[in-house]
Image 1 (cartoon, rainbow, N blue to C red):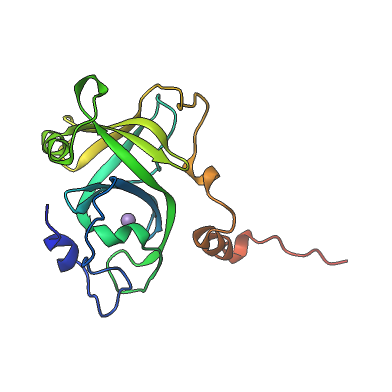
Image 2: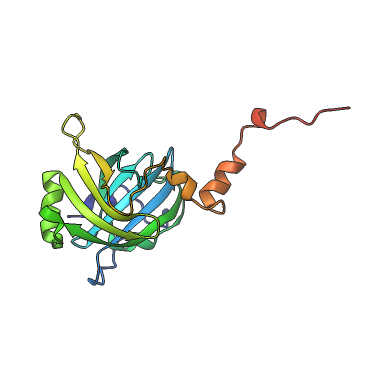
Length: 204
Ligand code: MN
């Protein structure tokens, strides 16, 4: 686990993002899902692991429906203090756009037979391309799996899948629907309706 790539991609004189000096309280493992309007709107799932956040960009966002398999592209590890980050990354910076916190909470890593395991064992599961965890979030709850796609040429391509448990939903799930209208990204998206789509006022 290293922040080398994270640091290399960023200029901390021009981005408000944290430089990674804070370390974990070490109590419970945390997770966060950022909603990120960069060149494309996507969600970033981050799981605290050995002092950093292992991170996956999920284009469609997480789903609570076990029949959804959501593409999750593994990206660079993020620093522990990124869990509280939200705001605007100015143009010209890596990931320029708006970042907001969509969900956050604690999580429990699970091993075979759904037995809780420790961080180092979980990190091994990440290396092996298959991990299970239990999320205690505000929106995301219950067991999930992340599995590296064997069929993809891109080794960073994973699938995020909800396990069927008492928290699972069996109707269409859209992460966007669970975002408050007051979210900065929703406000920015509203403003950007192209002129030709705005209905013209009729005369006479
Ligand atoms: Mn992102």
